[in-house]
Amino acid sequence: MNLKLLAAVAAALALSGCAVQKVMTPVGGSRSDGTVKLAYTYGLFEKPVIDPAAANASARQRCAAWGYSDAEAFGGAMTQCVNTDYNGACNQWQVTVEFQCTGQPEATAGSR
Image (cartoon, rainbow, N blue to C red; front, side):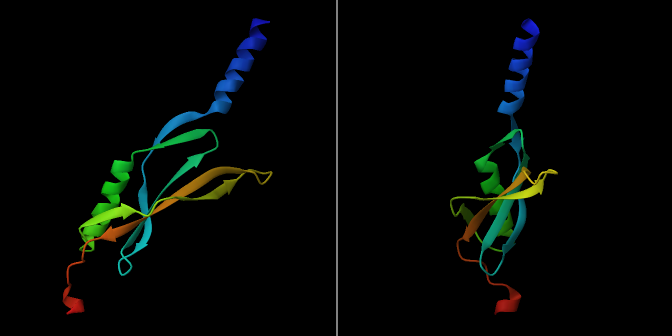
């Protein structure tokens, strides 16, 4: 009887997933539009935990390289399946957040 209870508890823990720290990395953007896309992936039994301040700092750094002074998240995120199992069920997702670079970009030699 205790073995069945232990198996049920183990199954419940496995299905509940684990909190996993994820780091958002640049995956695209447009210098001329002043946008930066950051993304992270997570698996079937993961519960992603994101540090929004670190994500904003990463976007700000990319924007600064283009001459902008800051960055703000547009709000919302796009989630898409990036891997399926043999039955076609999704088991890995990518979450993408777009940021808008703010502040006037510095003039470059090519734009004068």
